[in-house]
Length: 318
Length: 241
Image (cartoon, rainbow over all chains, first blue to last red):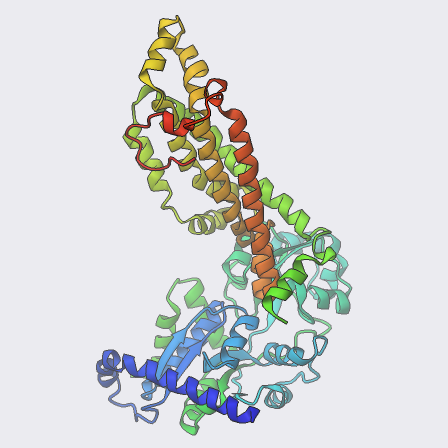
């Protein structure tokens, strides 16, 4: 009975989504026809709401997924910058969003914690993580083939701090932690293993102060102004090398593999959609992703613009 | 559990109130930012408002400018200043003061310029110097309106000071932003309720202060209230009591 009601709800949502997208048909058909000469049109009639987390790389990946799917004739609707995982996961779980770029370990940790707040993944390599994800995700969600591109959380420190304390890994940071002001997103204060509780548990760190700041420019600015000594950035962030920050080695491996992969509503993962997204994942790698991030961050190009160029360079669009 | 029940639960849990990240500490930070901002705004807006109201010069220019300043998006200005001075209290105080200046300036100028010319003449006729006319007649008569301006500024600033949390600082905005980041709705709503209550309590205290600031000569009269008896010519907006 419960299952039937759920099914009815899913059907109703799909009908609404299809209806909503149908309304937009008239305004976009012209564009599709113009740009879709070589597109096989495999995905004609399929529609996807694509979302992203609230940092530039996630927006960029969402735009890449959207562009690749659109080039094959799908109707796409991108909602960038939805928020933290806690926020956007609820949106994809309840069907408001169909597809999101994700990272293997962060997603797995999050999903496991939904059932048990103290759960931590056993899986550390990408294959194990993907298998564990398919097992742990709700029935209406699945993940596709991961790319080799990996974007781990990393703690970086500014040059002044490195000059003063001379550490190069998280164990060294923990020893000096009583003199360290650390910046990270608000949720960093409360999550484990990669967060204040995890750094305390696994490295014994007790930081002088924690400053809640969004990952990206706010943390980079605060590092440059010495308002914080160290902060949480992503390993593919071009700002790390541009500002001579030092990324600390995670010598106790609390940050496992973080391969980029699509998280998708199972009903939307048709063979055609899967094939397109697998091609995108195969074409992405870590260096390439760092370079794309640099275009967004250093050159100030729009994510959609950078995504369009990459799609064209890699033969996904004309 | 209902969100309402969770929120009540959050608000009534003792450990949420105490400690370095507790509600009491956040209220203290929140009031610090708010009072510093309104104080800074008053230091700027009161003298300027006095001059404008007393001389009647620059009325349109200054009031127009301060009215236009209300259109500045507070959060946008904070992000801009925060790029140069990250995680510092200065930008927060400045953007909140920008928010507080227009109501104080407009009400002060309106209060002074609205003093009945006959009263001013009488004061001069009694041999008062222009300074005495200003300090002994115009300022006291304008005080209720001026205080109303500060009151509305304070209310607005307390309700807006949650943006300090965007700059990595404290204040009650922490509960809203951190709660949202970890999807703890009880914390978001609980924090919002504390902000609203704090703003209303500040408003209430000010109403009492305004009553005691009403000039004795006007206080004896039962009705109508001074805001009505003082004619306020040519003042576009910003007058509220």
